[in-house]
Amino acid sequence: MSVRSGYEAGVPCWVDLSTSDVRAAVRFYSEIFGWTAEMIDDPAAGGYGQFVYNGKKVAGVGPIMGEGMPPVWNVYVATDDAATVADRVKNAGGTVVVEPMQVFEEGTMAVFQASDGSFFSVWQAGNHSGAELVNEPGAFCWNELVTRDPQAATTFYTTVFPWTPRVQQMDGMTYTEWLTGDKSIAGMIEMSPNYPEGTPSHWSTYFAVADLDATVAKAGSLGATVLIDSMDSPPGRFGMLMDPQGAAFSVIQLNETA
Image (cartoon, rainbow, N blue to C red):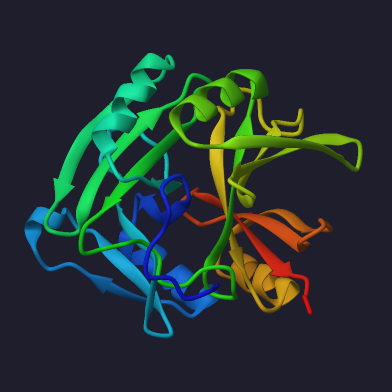
């Protein structure tokens, strides 16, 4: 289902961009995805805003809050109790980076670092339940953990969330799907040697697009770095980009299904 009004616990529900130049990022993503940005006027929001597509909230954007942190797309997993997740993170060997905090009447968020080094967030919904549109052009459709330690990541994330790993071989590599019940909700892959030395484990977000080649070309013309212009995968052809401020993300032209 593409239009959403809520998410089960354990399902990625929101993504947002932390960037060094919010105005430039808004221009860039508006050009390639057709998004508009609705910025929150309240100074307490810290310059945060939301991207909207066809009247639906699809992602967030705001300035980098931590000194020295790189521009990045952040992934939020839905939860019914952020405080309980924080306890699980500590017990599983992770770190609480931002303790559960209420965001106006919108909900409660927290930020963590997993034992494999990857950062992630949780969202306990209030008035804001998460992305209102997913899995179609103009919205995020997949989140994938790129990790240097799949074993540590598996132990950690299955302790923190109600996830079950389904491991499979794809084109000579091992790929893990995270399941909640029988639903595939995210993925994991071991970081390849092609990544620059020192690249930490991280979550990567995929956005669906109607035309991969046109999107990659447009992004390149706007100053993005094209890391992968086109690669085949079972769900469809995808590319990997780095926006002009340095945040990496992927775009995918999903295969048509009957």
